[in-house]
Image (cartoon, rainbow, N blue to C red):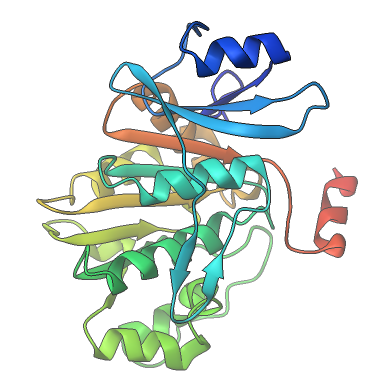
Length: 275
């Protein structure tokens, strides 16, 4: 992902500098709109959080995501703290969360989207994912059944956080979830919904433009992705997510946070040792 912009800056301050910050006498230059500021003490422990909004720093309250499926989810590290605040920010309609496997990007997006639906902030979640198989695996052929049956394998990362297949079916039956393959999205105009694009590393710039163009009144676009897990050369060459960050960072309608730490398990964290 863009090496120069991760959606946040980390600043280590002395006691005197912290005093000046809290009294409004400490100025910080170079922050972009919706960029976070993680304040560390002398021991490199995160002690406070701010976000640059409308030309000024706003203190970020401790974020909690909650719905009936998962219960409460609290941030496990500073980057998750920022990401959770972004997901709860109703004024930023385009949200991008990136990170390695196990960093929590999908968990936070799903939990946050379900919370927003249950609070009545949106009518439903529109789930979009490019139906691309993992690189260097064999095609399994055509799948039987209707659209849901065919796309269910691609929806399972969502299902993991809402009660499995039964949870997915319950949300669909109650009009809270609609699954749309990327190829069926053209021409749609989607209002009062969260359009959630999972595994967005497998999107070209044109795909991202297509999805953004579906956002109508009252809707938001949420994307997650990990550029290390791209599965086709076309996505590597297009660099859709990188271009999105480069072109939209600093825009008041766009927010971005890159997660850096795997929180899934000790075993999952070993994956990085194979690089």
